[in-house]
Image (cartoon, rainbow, N blue to C red; front, side, top):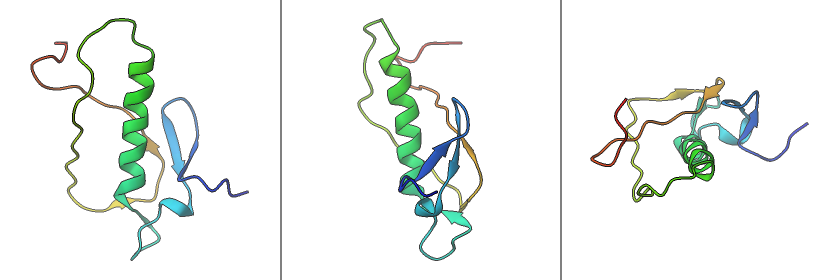
Length: 87
């Protein structure tokens, strides 16, 4: 059954791409825009659960180094910059 979405959830942090996320030249690769949207979704979910008032996201950038295969994706993020918490 096609939902019309780019990804279908597998569990809390993993998603399976649908045909809608495939690249224009190779259906076995993902177009980056839906994958970028999935990463922003993970950040939004994290921020919605925060109770503190630390600085909010002001810019998001992505570095890609090649094609992304059309396999399941695990969402996650890591803050950086001077306001990022140190671990």
